[in-house]
Length: 320
Image: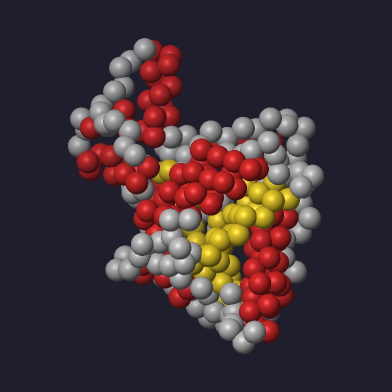
């Protein structure tokens, strides 16, 4: 069983999309999953709960939990920790009844704007090893579709049509450590998320905890079945220590260097850029943007007793 844990406050449009994708694309082929939603209470709490009940109620045997946190400022780390504790408590109760062994649950910490192909959960299961290994997939992050597709003289497709990997559509989010699979017992052994209340930082802190554990190896790999949807990022608190990192992340997710350059030319020189990238030969495109592929160029797996991080090439997953 893989237990998906999501934290949320508001953003019900993204949440509805996430639930629809889960129901229509994932659960028909893999029902050995559960979902725990930790919702930081606001004016939309009841609406979010009813939406969950309405959409997931179409899958009778699917187990889900909606846990509202009252009077709490949003903290992704705290929400995921509460989610892990909720699952562990349920597992312990089932263990007392003899139906399941406590600590044998696989956790997948996920965001509401991350979608996946169904075979991702096969990767999640096969790349975690209780007491020995946790999985930190590198997510493919999609660029702003309203910027990208017009440059190829194409209309913006639906979300499912955007879940493709290419230099034009996005980049490997090598700086992101938020999506991770691990056994609940290993999460507990790590000490869990630290109490970080600012934007970002908690994911890297948990990752570092696993690196410090002598018995745990970290499998870090590009996963072609996991996608981060584009969304506008707001960086409002200019006094925050995380403000520069937020701005950098916002800039990186808009488009490639070439796409942003073309957008700038259109802004300053009024040049019509619609369809411009569909008119040039493919070899030139590969030459210009080939370096942006990042981790997909990895062709060696490191797996020695001296290595704490195992890096695997993308092609290991190509047949799944």
